[in-house]
Length: 203
Image 1 (cartoon, helix red, strand yellow):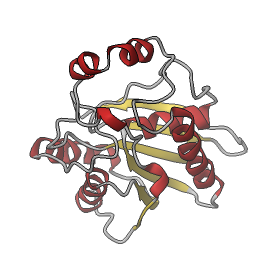
Image 2 (cartoon, one colour):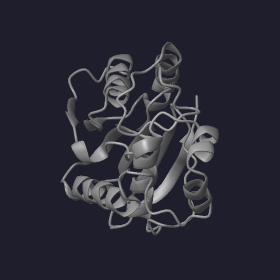
Image 3 (cartoon, helix red, strand yellow):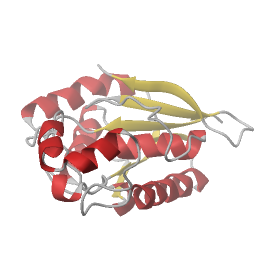
C-alpha cells in the first residue's frame, strides 16, 4: 500500500514568523495564521490519517487542532514529539534578518555563506538535523499504512525532506516551504525509499 507523509508548516504567528526568526520562542498563531491553516484544510480532504504528529510548540499544536476539526479528524490520535521543535536561534530569537545583520555582522556573513554552525548561543545545526532525522526515521519505521500528518516548522519540514529524500543536512536548501504550506512525501509499495510528491503547496 502506498504511504504518504503529509508535512504541514504552521501558519503566520503573532510574532511575525514571516519576517522574524522564531525558534524556541513559543509564539502563538495570529488570526492570519489560523485563516491560512483553515484554507489548507480542503487539500487534506479524503486522506485517511493513522495519526497526527506535531511539534509541542503552540503554533504547531493549534495548527494541528484546526486541521483536525476542519477535516473531521477529531478521533484521529494526536501526539506531540519534542524532537520536532524548531531550532533555537539563540541570541537572534525574534529578530529580523536586518536586525541580526546589524547586531551580529560577522556571524551574518558566515551564515549567508553557509559556514555558520549555529546562531549565536543557539542550537548547532548538526544537532538539530540529527534530532529531526531521528524522529523522521522512527516515524517511517512504524507499521502505519496510508497517511500520516506531521505539523511542525519550516526547518523541521526541510529536515524531514533531507533525511528521507537523501539530501545532505548541510546541502543548499532544497525545500521552499511557506507559512501554512503542504509538502507530501510518498512511499510506493515495495519501495524502501520516499519520493517528493508535492512541495510547499499553498491554498
